[in-house]
Length: 381
Image 1 (spheres, rainbow, N blue to C red):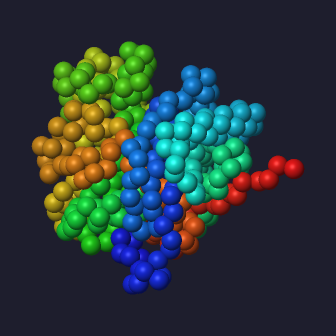
Image 2 (image 1 turned 135 degrees about the vertical axis):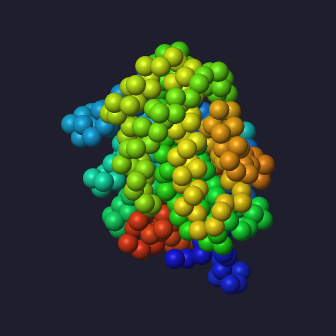
């Protein structure tokens, strides 16, 4: 495998730096993260603070409907077409609003993840909505999109794509030895690094089960600060029962759909508890799956860097801090809520430089894969 956090031997071999916007819409459906970076595909420099732009109510409702249909989306082409346009258009508007605050900057490239609504790697399927060509045309900028397709064509799971970014940032931050990066989005993904990436995988649920429960019971998108979970009691027998799911027995590399656990009877048993106890138990599930993932490191992990929305949940963070040395990504200069958008910018730059972004150790692909397709803006006649 390429040592992904090393630079070329000479500057003459280095790809040029570009000013790249990265766009990420997480599985929580809370909106669009926009990051502006300068990167050559190896190093990455933040040019402006990242921002998050909420989806319109109509688009979020339509996306929620799409997620609920899952594999049956094949039978709803009109919904898919509508959301391909809506997602692209709202991303374009987010970029325009963001760049209006930085009018002197000459952006050269956009990295576009799209909105994941279905991920079933065991079936060789993943779906990220949002039309990259429409976005390129709207912004009159080249776009790198469809970031997972080539990896899946090479036998990979299409996720996680974050390890190459984690390795680059940790090197820049001077964190060496046995370290790990945890991103707590809808799904929790973990990168283990000891000189080079040793593994990258989705270790289990992140915020998705917690957010689903608070949305249904409180009409709130999340348990703010983990306050309700902190008031609850962990039901360890139910936590352990959920962790008996076959996914946790699979060795990495592996990736997870945010709704993988919804059919489990034990999840319904957890949700039948008082709200505080249910949230406390689900937070404990997330903590335990992370600790099991860390145990797969060849050497004990010296530092765990955490990013993503889950850093704001004190029930999860307290559980992690009780077992290992934890740093939020903010502590090493990476805004916790903007890391994934910066990742997408790095992936776009690597695609233009012909550098791989996924590897057998991270997605299970048969060989290192250059992620993404290039979409030049079309000239309207």
